[in-house]
Amino acid sequence: MTAADRSHHSTSRAPVLAALTANVGVASAKLVGFLVTGSGAMLAEAIHSGADTGNQLVLLGSMRRAARPADATHPFGYTTFRFAGAFMVAVVLFGLGATLSLVDGIDKLLHPTRLGSLSVDLVIVGVAVVLEALSLRSAVNTAAGARGEQRWWPFLRETRQPELAVLLVEDTSALIGLALAAVAIGLSAATGSPVYDACGSVGIGLVLGVNSMLLGRQMLSLMVGKSASEEQVATIGEQMLATTGITRVVHLRTVHLGPDDLLIGAKVVFDQGMSAETAAEVVDRAEMAIRRVVPSARWIYVEPGRPTERSGPGAATAGKTPNRSAAGTGREKR
Figure 1: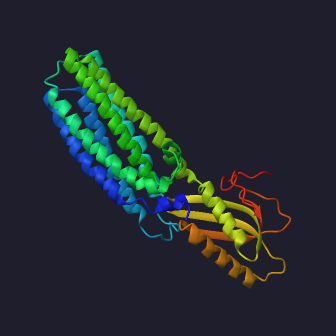
Figure 2: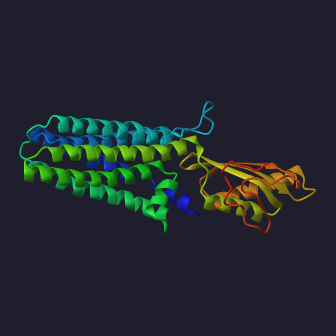
Figure 3: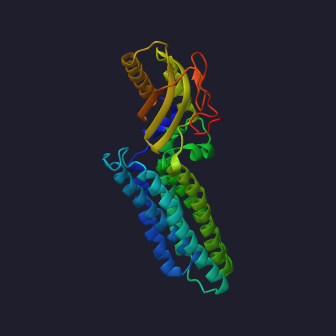
């Protein structure tokens, strides 16, 4: 089984629910801290945690809708809802949180206000760090099996599991935001100047804005239709060529209709003189072989090709490895 397919079986509602539980408590505590002290950084953090809470609710809702069975109107099912939900989280909730935090911080820079006792805020930040760290650990443990030896940044860019990407970025940015809040509140408490607190609010808004741009771009790519991983494409091609009766893969294209739903289209060259009945049996064997190693290959469509046809993406001949660089990209030289 490929690393990408291991990740398909590693994502569940558990880490989302863990993050939701932590964020509800953290957001409530931060809001109380703001009401007591009037700290702009604490308000920005309350907005941050409020956005994170909304994120989890949207993710859970999209996962539920994605589980609906296919019907005549949506013959491939509704799993794309998981990509759409994550895109909404990235653009709407993170974007809105960034805007509110920036507006509040800039307003407090232009119109400084006296702050109350900030010791309450520092205690709340400390508790929030513990809860967010536990939430991040849950997300990291969930992603560990899928990531393998891959570094975190390439993994976040390449994973087809939107919930994992959102949770990892969200919890990491939450800890960064808390660090900014702690420094800002601490400096304001030490100097008596509300400027540092306002700067903390602006900094947290910028963190949320970066989250929105990074995740928005990744989720848009998934919504448009992203191919299988290079490892998966190579494995699919190898399994086709290993099937007796197939001598060449003319082209191979793949697209994720959902995190766990891979659509495969291929044109292959069969042994000369093969009957239609025998070709159908060969295709059945190839499909079974592919699904053994790539369980996410839910739909596989194979059509016969001519031996003289020009090769396209994912092309391979018996005894040769499929072309990984072009496979599944949808680009073909003409």
